[in-house]
Amino acid sequence: MLDFKKAPFLDLEDYKPPEGENFLYIPMQDNKRIRLAYWKLPNNKISKGTILLQQGHNEFIEKYYETIKELIDRNFNIVTFDWRGQGLSDRMIKNENKQYIEDFSIHCQDLSYIINEIIIDKFPGPLIGLGHSMGGHLLLLYQEREQNKFSSLILSAPMLGFKYERVLFFIATMIKNFANKENYFFLSKPNMGKETPFTQNDLTSDYERYTRTQRLVRKLPKIRLWGVTNAWICAAKDSFIKIRKKTWAKKIETPIYIVNPLNDKVVSSDKTIEMAKKLKNCKVFNISNCEHEILMEKDQLRNQFWNIFDNYMTK
Image (cartoon, rainbow, N blue to C red; front, side):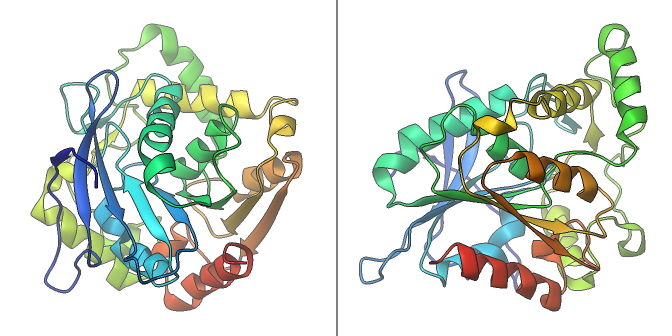
């Protein structure tokens, strides 16, 4: 259906992409390649629309095979891609281990291109955005550009603020003009390619899903990054400041549903609630005893996410 160069993908003996996978490299306007994957329902199935699934910081398509299968089983077509600078999309600087971006607006440009040039004419509507963490932030940020493309958004632990961000913002202000943009941000604790043991992870309480991701990374370590740069931290700060302006959220009309894990150690669940109050058409669902990655959590917690999804996204 799409005439682009095929892209590689990973799998495991016990964890493979859902049937009908298509992995492609999509050249952006600056010739950077975005790795995109899609699944289109067969003609004998009645489509409920198309899900644009957006990953968080330092994630990659393969991590979401399980989620993609669950969405396909609900009769949705799926489009997803690795953000530029991570996964198997092209990096922005020579060092492929660093998370580098100077302005989040370039992500929105990529998103706009993929929606307008690939999704709108080739996939059935309605179009629903499903974004986790940084992906949730970027889906929300994109709404200021084009609000008529998505029928609704569902955001999982969206990156709308960090814990202890006052200190982080102060340091970001200091380093913006004096530090090398490509250096690791010194508080990011670059892992230099080492695995974080399950007992020390801040993402999920589910051992099997956590180690499944580690097994994927062992097959191709470069699919993961080692840490964030000064440039990325400054870009995140600038984007937070932008969306927190009093008039910004009032302009967003898109229906938005936020799943907010209350035991999140990565982003601030309180900042999520604050933003939700500013948005015109937003509902927040707080999930107790849940860590940052609800779609990689234990079944009883994931089931709460799917109950929300089924109640609001499939009507």
